[in-house]
Structures are given as structure tokens and as C-alpha cells.
Length: 296
Image (cartoon, rainbow, N blue to C red; front, top):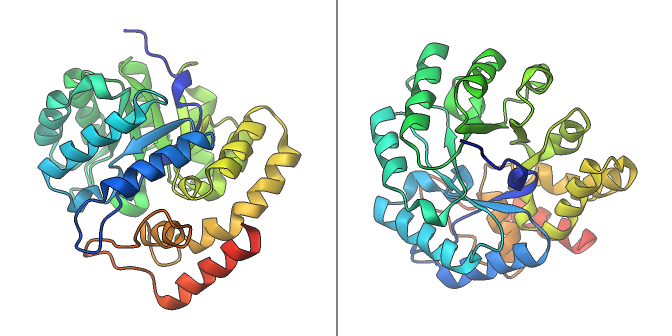
């Protein structure tokens, strides 16, 4: 089964889910955010990954957000659905039941909390691949899952299934990322899962990023990634350092509260998040506001 990997090259955005003050989904704000990002050059969206607060949305809300997002995007850019968890059977069923016509791929986080062995991780993803109507992008984020997908396991999965087309790598382990890039099949994508290392990651062979920061500053972030992918590192470096304060500020008190504060300052949505997350402190809000006033 031949898969088109090139559509996940460049700047992907890990979308927030905007909420109104009463905690319901804010469709008006979501539409505004999607258009703002497409008009400013992002390459694709991930809907309901970690940044979308998927852990606190009901199954019905998830379907509603996906359907609405797809109806606004209208195939202008590729759309990826975040579907992951630590119950392989349940995740397989969710992936199987998705309306595959709306999406281009699934982003699936490695099982958290259970702390599976590498063999467990391998079998988990092979079951998802066997049942999925769409290509799958692995997501390795040990800081959230308490478990790492090793380079060996990633390469094993890449070789074992054509359905598994790439990995969002957020381990922070540069040697591990280089190991994957050096030994991967030609058409397997390695995508940065960390805004901060996007530029250095591209320099050693990454295909781009799935970014949190980009949805607030899509024009500059997309331009940085595009320049870097073309080998123009001087202009990319300049943009990296313009964005650098936000790469730090947005994660100071956890994500997505940081980016939601920025989007609120930019007039795109409320800063509301659902518990157990909380909005950023007033001190951090003012720091983000000052940084935006300074650069934007």
C-alpha cells in the first residue's frame, strides 16, 4: 500500500481546542484559528492530539470537533486525527470506526501509564496498523508517557508495516533521533515533536515539526521551517530566535495553557482550559503579552 509521505513535510500544527468560558467548545474561535493558520502558510493540522486537550473531551465531543474541523479545512491542507491511549483494543476500535474520508493520517501516542516493554509497544502499533484505514504516525513523548520508543523499535515498526509512515519524536534525545534518521526506510518521515529543536532537527535530517507555537505565529514559523528545509539556515536562524522566547514561555506552566494565553492576547480565542489544567498565572500572561508587544 503506497502512502504519500510528502504531505507531512513542513509545519504541522498541533491544534488547541478553543473553549468558551462555560467550557463548551467554541466553534467560532476554532474556525477563525483554522483560517488564520491556513492563510499564513502552515502545511497540515493535527486535530485532538495532546494540545487539543483530548484527554478531557468526551467521545461525542471528539467526533463533533473532527467533523467541524474537516468541514472548515475543506481539504485545503491535510488533516491528521490524534487517536492514542493505553488500551490497545479500545484504540483499535476507535481508529477502525473513524470517518477515514475526513483525514489523511492518524497520530497515535505510545501507550502511557502501563509502561509496556518494547515488544508490547511494537505489538500495540502493529495491531493498530492492521486495523487502521489510514496511515499511522507514531508519537514518542516519554516526558508524558513515562516510556520511550527506542530507535530500534521505531525502525522495526517502519520496516514491518507500510501503514506506519513516520514518527513524531519528542524524546529530546538527539542521538536517538539521528539513529532513526540514519537507518530508516527512505520514505519514513521523522517529525520534530518539540518546537525548540525544530531548526537543529531539520539540520540533521528531520522533515519538519508538529508545533504548538506555530498556531500563534504561523507565518514566521512556517517560513523558518521552509527556509531550513531548503538549506537556508541563516534566515531560518533569524526567525528561530524571533520565536525562541515563545518556545520557552508557552511551556513554562504547561501546554496548552501557554499558547491559549497567547491566542487570547492575539484576539483569537478565550484562554479557558479544562481541569486538571489551569490557565497560566497572571505573571506569565503579562510576560507573554510583553513578548508579543515587543516582537509582533
